[in-house]
Image (cartoon, rainbow, N blue to C red):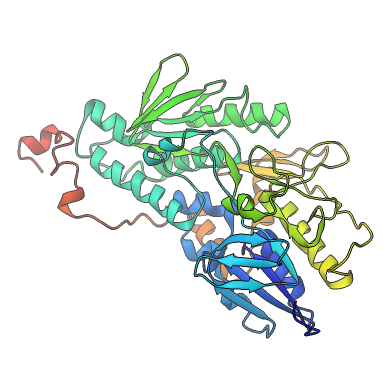
Amino acid sequence: MSSDPVKHVVVIGGGFGGLACARRLAKRDKFRVTLLDRRNHHLFQPLLYQVATTTLTGPDIARSLRGMFTGSDWIDVRYDEATGVDLEKKQVFLGSGVTLDYDAVVMAPGARTSFFGNDHWAEHVHQLKSLSDAIGIRKAVLRNLEFADQTEGEQQEILSTVIIVGGGPTGVELAGAFCDLVRRNLKRHYRRFDTSQQRIILIEGQDRLLAPFSPEQSRYTAEHLEKLGVEVRTQAFVSDIRSQTVVLKGGEELKAATIIWAAGVQAADLTRQIEPQPELTRGGLVKVAPDLSIPGYPSAFVVGDCAYLEQENGKPIPGQAPAAMQEGEHVASLITTTPLDKPRPTYPFRYTDKGQMAIVSKGSAVVEVKDWKPRGWLGWLIWLFVHVLFLVDFRNKVGVLMSWFWAYVKNVPGARVFTDASSENNLLTKGLIEPHPEDRAGKQ
């Protein structure tokens, strides 16, 4: 370890937890911080679904990590990926081949999609973890609608159908937003395709949507989505996924050109590349000490989606942005005020539950803050305010507000463009769908 009085802290991950930690450390001049991320931007994950459903664009919810620390002399942002951590040698190994020595390490690599042991399903579905994922979903839905307008019958139905697996906040928000987009905003955009006939199917294995919410909020959500036209399938278990096909337990097959997986997450691969291997949960989360350090290693911390710590009520701290931010700030405080190279008094992390919320559709959301449970328009306004408040940059706030004005007040859909319109990707040219009768007759 260096004898330099300036301590080197490596923060792995520029998500909510890692960013909160790095920003707090940046205010102290006795700490040199290396912030690692395999993306060059911080992504506001709660609004990612709005990029997929055309309400927002990528720059609205992303901010350059380097741009966020241009005034910080002690922060070094590196575009790289941590591939392993040696707790004994206090080293972080990078994908580029570089090895970083540290005085303290904060691991916040986030989560990845879990297919519950069926990883081969990944090739048939869209995921929603990154900007490229969101843009891919948007392109798939819009492209399939274009082809749906050029055919008829069963082929038209399959092309226009969207199946969403997972009835948590992401699945609910996607289902409601696609209804708003296709059934409302695009209803006059297609001459030969009736957008009111589009099928949006939401599949959930539990007996209700939004399981972490109260039963009454779950019931309101399901009823509201069904009024919009969403087919809500609870207690429905997926047994297989093939090309354009979801097979439910019992044998029922559902056909759709767009299948979105929003059903499960697990810890990033990095947690299994820590040596010596700490105790992990089944999903790969690190079982941390009350102060968020790895037991036996007071200079190594895990925060966010990869940390497992039970609260006093026996429930684990939720993998949500507010919790990750609180964890990141707590760890930064420990690093700056307590010894890093020897056992210290226990300063346990105390999670402050600020509630939970999910938007259902335009003008409707469910919110829970302890015993206060607003929904509908009031819940929606609260949802809008909170999400703008937590955006990391003033420019992002203005951009999002302007986009919401056009989408929610003017009912004007957002970014509906996509690339890759070559003939080799045209379903008609490839003979995968039959042309509409008007086209076969040579009519315009």
